[in-house]
Amino acid sequence: MILAIVISAVTFVLSGALHYAIVSGAFRHLGAASYHRGRKLVTALCVSGIAHLAAASLYALAYGLGRALEIGDLSGDTPTTAMDVFYFSLVSYTSLGLGDIVPTGHLRFVAGVEALNGFLLISCSAAMLFLFMTEQSEESSS
Image (cartoon, rainbow, N blue to C red; front, side, top):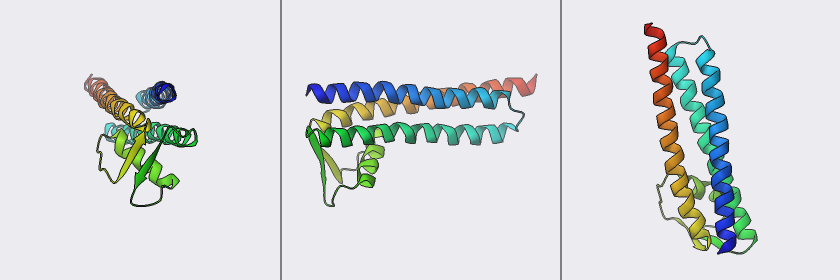
């Protein structure tokens, strides 16, 4: 269980830092750019999506590490390929939880932490997008 906690904590911190670095860097660049507001919004949405895919990728790597350390596995109807692990990570990150792939052992803890982290980071993206677009609206009206 200690390994699952350490893997979860490290992945939680790394995914938060990665998300912040990607999104805040892009928003700084977009704020200074002379694009139309609509183009800025679409670009900000795409960058936010990329940041979430990167965070889910970190969790997929964490599941791979957990499987290699034999603290748990992912079970389902099909063999678990790298794409299955990434798919499971995305389903967990977004709290969708389809259930066709199920974590076993201590990887269940990692999946729970990923769902919490995904919820928090998706909420952060929504808040940052709102603030970014509010700033853009204020700049264009003045």
